[in-house]
Length: 344
Image (cartoon, rainbow, N blue to C red; front, top):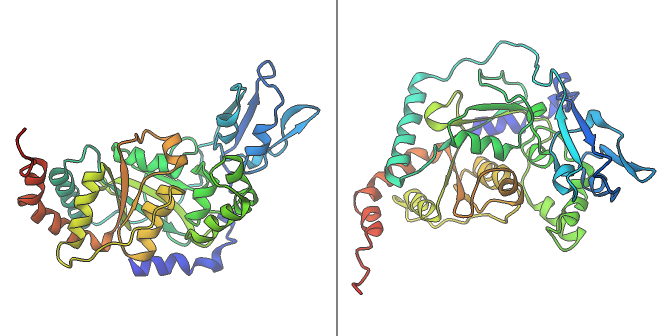
């Protein structure tokens, strides 16, 4: 894993490579319903890419080519007067020789890990293999979505069995995409302005501190994200993401400590859940990390209020799985059987 991180962090010299010149290669059309629009201007205020302006009391798409399809404008419109449409041909990408397929021995190891996690924890959904493809690496043969998705949406699709690869022109969230190193951070997000509009933080200073304290990879150092069910991984994983109940996260935490007794220092804030807390912190720290989710992932995916997440660096997976098997022999079944609950 350390070699992979070094590859990503050392990719600054290719930051201006031609393949990243157009971060909006998937074009969108912004449609306004004049009969519903009140001219309130919220769409222009909330658009992170400054696609929309208000002219003569009505919104206008002044930079449609910059639209990411994040649908923040339509989500904030009080009268539902905005519709974002992907333009014809949006799914087209340049053909190239794909990366070598994942070695079958590694695939079998991933399947065995997934089987143990699913069986011992009683997971309802697939554990997810997460990979960040470095700027100078070939892309693996993994399907790409027709339209842009948020990283958290792709991760949730993988837990339901769908493998997806997303270059920058398939990502819908400018914030998460900048965190994961696919693109620069937009000015409205870097300044903290957008967080204040969302009423997520008290002040611009608090928003700027939150942005400054979160980790991020160098812009354009990552070429694509890949999220696959762990039992159907298509390329080498860096992090295994598990979506489950707090009780299941407890056992995973204990499994990681089973042989060492180490207590964990988790970093979770409710901001940038899947990109920072489930993916980037485990990747860069080499330690497991939990996430309670965030505004974005809960507003744009099917994560319900009973679930939380954990990211596990692949380098720790052998110990996690071995520890989980041991816990599954006695501790887990006894706890679930409520062996110490007195009769009433």
